[in-house]
Image (cartoon, rainbow, N blue to C red; front, side, top):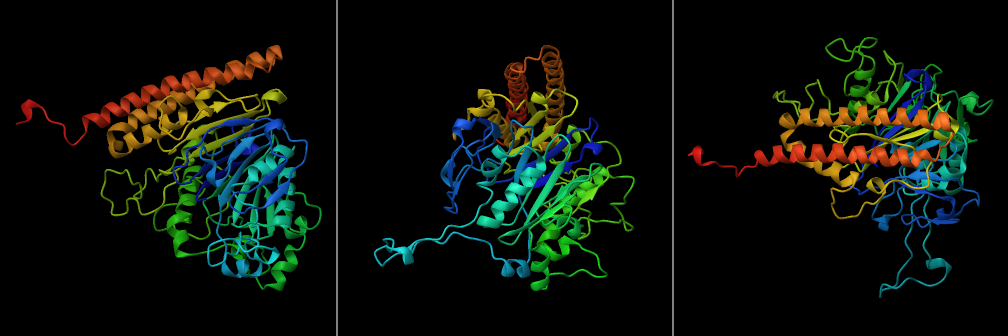
Length: 496
């Protein structure tokens, strides 16, 4: 799925939390935020896309998920935080190249053979062949069973080796201390790297890692992990394109296509430009990196500490302050030529934040955003609760402004055609949500720390949703009025 991921190590943040964020850019998928209790977790899982069946352990933990309302194509749980304060987001669709995919083909579902009448051919020979696991499945198969980010990598890696995958993907995990990033290689291979504490990782739908210690991954495994036979896989299939003894996985497993330069790399350029405006040059004839550069770093040390608001800005990006902004009032001749980060068809975005300065039961904080991030606001909630408020979880396929998902979608659709006059309303809305959300989190962090009553997290979430509904309804009313004023059939008697 075309998405954008941002990963932030704990020394790069203002509060020493770890953060993983991803826009889930489906095709206007209706989404909700729910809590999955152990009793509701399946013990045998069957994928609707690939029809693979997998037996699951009998000791799942509670976790949050953002599934699709319409489950005809599967759960698509997207992202969540479990009871052990481990966050996960899956998946970022990444690119590969023909050499890798020929050497280790993707594991795709093969439909059963049918006779002339359209009936399935009986017997073993005519039966279909299950495919591997994919974005539909991965959160459900992994998140309920892991107690650290590293455990997440190891569990997912073993599943990829056993069942394979039908798509190329990147998956992120975080806990209180570490962030890990895993990228699949072909059908069954993978590699993963611990994100250095001081950096921010930028991932725009292409194979990302530009450095990897293969000796560590196959030895002590301090900060790198991979398939046990990855060295042989590279050697036997002549995949190594590197020169002078370096090991750049992006050159080995990734792509450098014309489409990357329009769809993918400009997003990394915009985010890097925001994070390091002083330590790197991003504009002009002497720029180190441009929107179509193949060598934009996978990770950067930001010029200042990164906040939740910074991550929200990054994943809402549409090239503000550049000639490529589709909403620019200037006719630059370059408006809209690159794929924005905050795109119209995003279903859900979350920032999984794991904190260190609060008691263990409330270390996780999940910031949820529905719809296009350019217009939608971020709402923090405590994930370690038995259920989510109806404002987040009671979402139907039919539009209804009484929930956060549809209200957010309506704001974006109404404001987009009138960006110039609505942008101030949207900015005020985002700021109000950020201020009031932070105030409530501070209040309830303090209450729960002082009393030890962590059941207050449910009350906190209800208060947060009450606030969000008030601010979102206000924003919806404002943009609806502005859109109504600017309808093409507007006419007053004095106009003649």
